[in-house]
Amino acid sequence: MDKLNRFFWFCSGAHIPTLEKYPTEQNKYTGIGATIFFTGLFAALSGGYAMYFVFKGDDMAVIFAIIFGFLWGAAIFNMDRYIVSSINKSASTNKQILQATPRILLAIMIGMVISRPIELKIFDKEIKERLKVSYLNGQRAKIDTLNKAFEKKYQVEFGRLNQQKATRDSLEKGIKADRQKLNFEIFGNKTTETSGVMGYGPYAKRKEAEIAQRTAELDSLKANINKSEGFVDKRKEFDGLLSEKLYTKKQLDSLSDIAGFADRNWALGQLKFNVDGTRDNNTAIAVTFIGLLFIFFECLPVFVKLMSARGPYDYAIADGDEVSIYHSKKDKDFHFEVADNIHETRVDSESSKKKEIIKGKAYRDLEKYDWDGE
Image 1 (tube, rainbow, N blue to C red):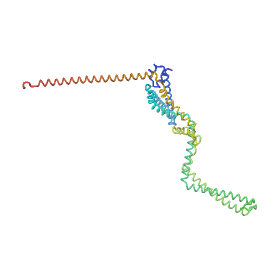
Image 2: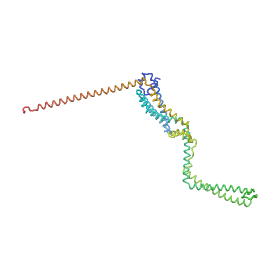
Image 3: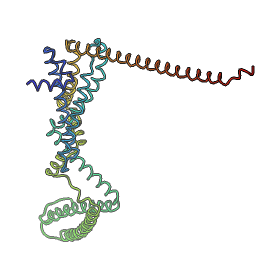
Image 4: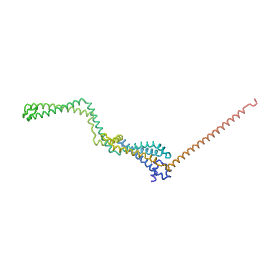
């Protein structure tokens, strides 16, 4: 237990030899260190999970995820440790808040980054379903676009085909009406166009001949329509339209399983809305509160450090800093004095040397001087 406490003290950025002298402060820094450690752990899991989807499908995906997760977790851990340990408790409350403000903003950004991949895992099932709908709609839109482009490309052929189909429908409708009239004539049903006399008379023979002629026209027209449709199908096959089909359930499952981080992140954002475009408040609130939870968890060590009263450990650290600063200043003064004395010694030594040189020169000049000449 003692080793675990010391590990959390290290995580909090506390000076362990000083903290050991003040038992009343140890629990506070154990809690701060534990929060920083678990924030780094969540960051490692979050980063590894995100990287796994970046390299998903690669044989090295798991290894890349582990390496990146470890590095990302270590970076966040080190940053949190620095953020908390750099808050100076010896300063005034306003100054502490001013010091903590940029650190809190940084913690909020870190919390947002950490929370996103974990949210992706929490809503994994819903994300897959939304991705399936998206992929299916995308494929349907693609097929519709291809069909429209194809119809525009072969506008003349489609116009002729549609005209033939309209003529076919008209012929079929007319033949059906004529057959009914023929039956009325044969069975003696009186109408405005039938005689009402039962039997197979001249009118019936003429009507039957007309029906046979129109049926032959219809058969010929159907043959032309089949020929035109065959041409259109061949062109569709040539242009690749027949190979484009809606995804099956198995294909949708496969696509949603291998979806990348960007697609899953988009789908998570879309969970806040229903398929019809209306806002899904329940899911939106759940996603928002999960993100806020991790942001608060990331900011918690800073808040704990700010809210905690200044204890004996903080005074000891402040006093130690003052002593260190004082020693540093004295060391500076010492080096200044040594430098000054060395400089004075060098000046005196050089001055003495110059004086001796000048004296020697003066003596030589005196010896050379012609005293008799004067």
